Image (cartoon, helix red, strand yellow):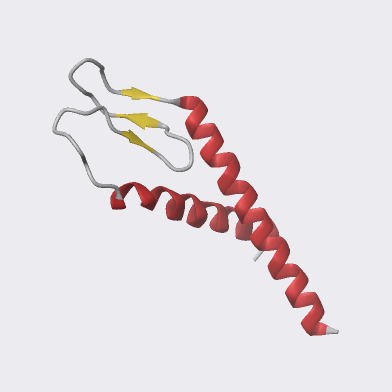
Length: 86
């Protein structure tokens, strides 16, 4: 596989792993406007006084962090493999 394909797969997996944290959060009221996304919120549900909205800055932040985590993981794998081959 090429490096770009491996990086994109690792990015998707890290983004999915970070977003899975929202399912472990308990809902504390019936009509709260909940924010989804980790570490930055990228979606807000409809509440009593607010409407649903999509937060583009949060999505950009989440994707940037997922890309950085994937790049760091790929770099670590490359370093470990180069040390084993010596």
